[in-house]
Length: 135
Image: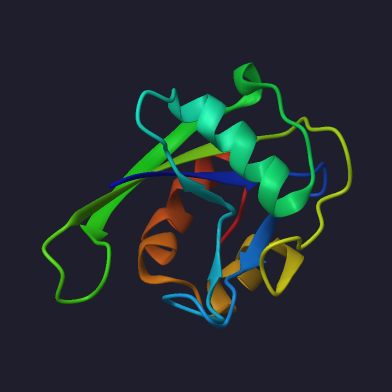
């Protein structure tokens, strides 16, 4: 399963984190916003679509910069592999809101480290250091 996620970065060295819906797998844990890539969809187009659905913001696909990836099981004990492609983004239209999750929070890097992160998101967090996020 291919998943895309965005580290939205503001001008104050903060990143936007999204709290997963309590009723879903990893419910209540924090993550980078994003979601599944549909068959035939380009990852950056999928990420633009997912951010519009989850946060109500509009991002042009060329605004995403690759930041890394992580792999693991989609569900513990499941053999279906999950690949998360992480992108950074500094330019979007609108104010991010928690339309599908429990809440959103702007965090400094060290604050992100202290959140109860989904396992693969915790693995992705160090990829933000080259983008000015101090952990």
